[in-house]
Image (cartoon, rainbow, N blue to C red):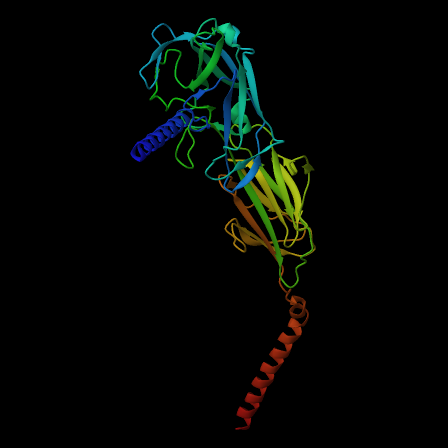
Length: 419
């Protein structure tokens, strides 16, 4: 009896393990996370097509989204008569053209806007900012069980380049959607949707269960390499940091020196995005405004502000590829030595030179915004030499020196005569 019970217990445990493994395998086959999407089994009549923009920045930060709206248009594909789907049990089915009448609406939109932010870093993970274009189907309209194929095409309301968005390698604006339709049961002929597969290919692409590389959740990053993007839109921005030091025993650290920043947009970028502004100390920047995200300035080719000792201006989220150069006005009655560098106290961006009262410094060397750009601006006014003393008494000193020399010569002559 005990042996029988033990055998039954072992059998029950084995069945439990098999059942658990079956659940695990099912979950692996229907993983619908955006970057590991193999197809999804669901009875939901609405499917969301994922749209991702990968945000890249030299710092771990958040940046504003670009202003762009994507439209997705669904239409019936033309799979022909030889296009098939084969699952892991080698069961095959022929793909049919999807009836457009089964879709409640033929277009769906996804919008990104500069009133929202997204996480950005050098690796460009950005998975937090995924949005969905939703399409809803009416199962009864399909008419019969089967696999129905649709084509989905992406367009945008502006050119991507105009807002600083670039397409990663192998980008494809088209996707194909297979909708799986069956009867509710052998005794209930009511049609239902039980799954979807979204993939890149053509109208006539035949798919087997092993063809996971072409499947995805939509327009998302398919690269499995950290810091790499594939088949997805990318928005790269960088930041500019301006730091001010006024030094020297005769300098006025509280003086607000006017600065002018010349920005040029990257090639093809015509939009005027909002750039986040952080002012440190007593720094000021003309033209700033505030919205729900924070303080910003609209991108412009010329920006003006003021900085004094210990203050700073930080501009975040400038579309990458543009350039920046800085000049300063000496609004004091004194002559300052001015220099600028990529690090504090350096002069690799602007060699130190004297800037007279009311004059402008030379521009810092133009820096391309392909990484964070730092500009450390230093003004120096040391002790002024009392040069006026030399000017007033120099003639008299020369006369006295000449008199002494003449007196010495005359004494020597007199001594020689006496001898």
